Image 1 (spheres, rainbow, N blue to C red):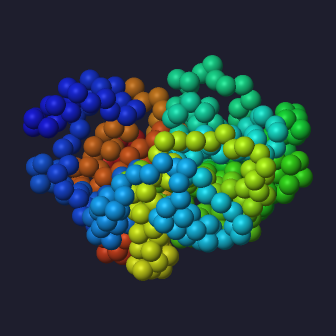
Image 2 (image 1 turned 90 degrees about the vertical axis):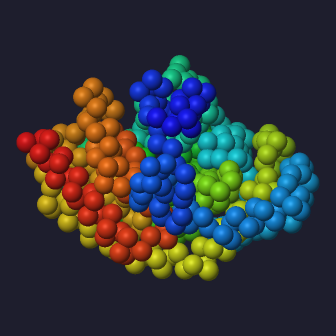
Image 3 (image 1 turned 60 degrees about the horizontal axis):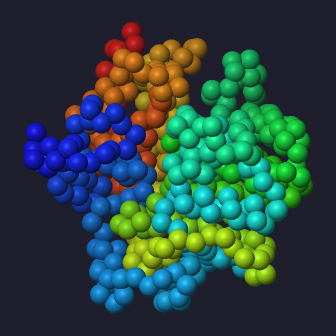
Length: 443
């Protein structure tokens, strides 16, 4: 064990882990879609770290923008105007195509969602907040209460007014339903009726917002079925509820569009973002408030504030990243390599007994492992993995040089958006080899 790893274990607390079981790799270099550990082992970064390094490692334009801003003015309080602060907000609003919108900047995604909650409650004068069971919105207190999956448990008993609902996940619907669904329209109709019934029982005059990860991220890359997003938008309009799209993971060309909601015929009231806005080079997040919500705060005090809101170096990085998305024609690359990813994942599903389902949009995808394809029994259930099966899967992938992370019985395949077709094929070959081993595990 190197001194760096030894000191890391001695002095650092690492996220989402029992500290005594950790043995973190010491990363010494990164470039493009790759990084290297202290032993010289090369890894394909097939989750873009935490689905945030969209433009890859070592982007010179973003690095230079941060350096230049540090030389010019490293920090100024958020009550002041400055060039990069204004320019970053302008570029974001323009690319959201939400005319008349404004941006409130935060440090990261969890804070973006915290402030979106406050904005929705202030704007509507109501207090209940809906979010999906299969969702992750952050680990701070409000965002954790917004989160639907088990990582919220440590914050419970929670804040009153946070209500969970079942969003579309036909693969994991009760067997009587998934055997009955004929097409996407039936899936949409069922889940919209389920949601509206719950809205009525909770009282539409009490509900401030319905939060959705536009495409559910860590909990399964669940792409909304046709008509679902439009149906939620219509429901929100009908009952005067804010529709909030969490684009922290799905934004910034992850699905091939600036923002994932642009794949459907909707305009949200609030959009939270982070991750790909700077691609991890410095922390930055924010909330895009639609014109009607932004205008409300012309005459009503907005109770949102952070020391580092609209940090100049974060804004400079965002400007550089936005121009890099355009200059590198990232939308075209996502479309081109996304096709290779989709075909590769479908081939894995057809070939391997352990691959129950694959879901994808753009370069945003998941592989769901099962013990039995016919019954859809998951490889591990609800994060309960006493035999450590998923850590073994991740370990086998790392041994091949394929880096990603797992959640429940799934692994992400959501690489840096600069990945080439050849690099994608090479990485999928590694995954194919590991799936052979998992097939043997479940025999």
